Image 1: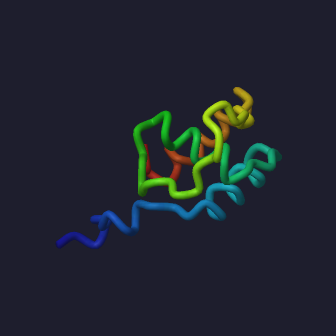
Image 2: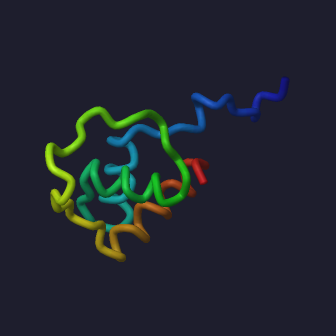
Length: 81
């Protein structure tokens, strides 16, 4: 096996690593919610969400376009998309 081959676990970045990358490279603070929304948009679903709202019409903040772009850039950097 090549030294440069990555396992599936090595390709994944933690939410904190993504937050740190976005802050360092774009100067933006992003929340775990925004990261999860962007990951879901790109088809990265890691597990079921058990913390669901009690009512169906609960409002959830939507990730602003500039933060979505920065998170997408971080996901590409870490090889997740």
